[in-house]
Length: 405
Image 1 (cartoon, rainbow, N blue to C red):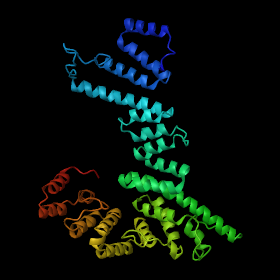
Image 2 (spheres, one colour; image 1 turned 90 degrees about the vertical axis):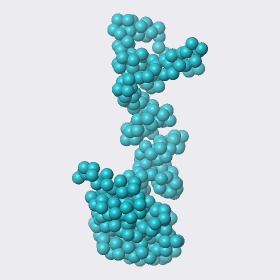
Image 3 (tube, helix red, strand yellow; image 1 turned 30 degrees about the vertical axis):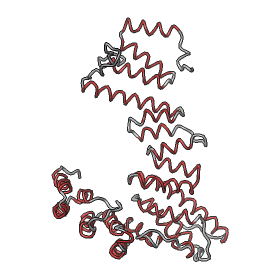
């Protein structure tokens, strides 16, 4: 059996024993920690730090449960709660050091066993960034970045680089919907930037091949380059897998960052000019995928806002609830909230959401909208009408809590 400390010689044992006799247990434990740290013996470092921190707090170096008279454990010794809290904090710091060291040395799964307890995804991501991705460790890296949620944006970038757009879209289809909005946005930003860069490069190469003397436009955008060759896409020409384009535009509706929204709008405008055979239908209220997505992106950028509100409200009030559920209502409310009108969004949801229908979760909740607007009375009144004491209490208590401006 492999012993990672086998290289330690007899002098090391003597030194540690002499240090414990002359300077005490803490000095000996600290020396052990430093030796394990220098030799990058990470699991052993954790055990050494555990002993050190217990000694620092006046505890026995190793917790040993008492053995009863019949050879059975008689129960763990009760620890002072304050001492236990401090020990837990120091052990979490030990997990951070050991887990980070293991990850940086390429021992990803072992490292994650320690870092999962820490709950610091940013630290874990930086530790993993030191690992060069290969085909051998790619599955593990993607599992940690994406499935474990360490850094979904970085995981998406890695998947795009090493497995391409198609595999990345498949991955996001199965993962992103289950993540929170911030994780969704990190992943989709990476995808939109990648697809936009690839499509623009392909478009520029095609236009310059067809028109060798063409002058590059001042704005480096898809729309600007399409403007140099009007009607270029009418005959069925395309410069990127059209299913990839459609999926990317669909994903991009979660975005809020203006710079990435502009890229998404650029992609949607390209899609809008594609031949009819590539005008894929999508789910309501984005059945007309590219025109509706373009209206959405522009509204979030502060462009043609009233026109977008009209068209999405018309969709919300005309879509068949039996066939499509409340997706139209929720989408319109989400748009209102995201352009800075949460009070209107909340009142619209209260007025139009039918009782007994399960929402899709597209729009923010009433408590989120009330908190954003500072107006809690409509939610309180709505909860009273429905006999919802929990909802009423949530609005009441939240309204009394000092709001951070």
